[in-house]
Image 1 (cartoon, rainbow, N blue to C red):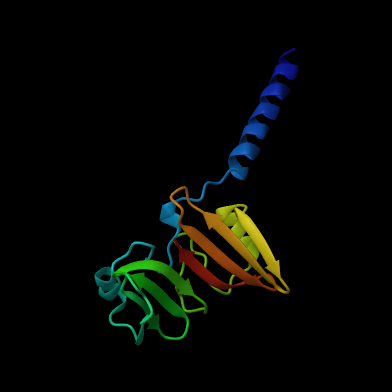
Image 2 (tube, helix red, strand yellow):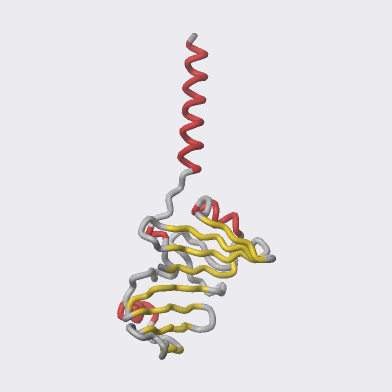
Length: 155
């Protein structure tokens, strides 16, 4: 009788562990690249990275001041009215997510940190994995041949 009860407890514990590990929640604190997230101000970003190498101003914007700041060829930030709306890294430049994921890592490292994405789309040898916070901020990973080639945080 005690053996059956002990086996029951072991099975129950195993089920609990598997449910907890499968239900990773993606939250807003994870949606950042190099310490920059959606909602960061131009002043904050300048305090970390200094002046950008290049600024592109969107002249067609009707009701807002839209700019894209470029730091080298592999890091860019889109702004609307001085607030970051999209952050992108597309090179192995040392920029990481809060979980330590960077361009150049294998896809399995991403899924081990973040779990299953909300959506997955495939285009030839490229796959797009999207994680979504409850507040609507998304983190997108572009995977080519099993390797992360771009990370994007956007509203």
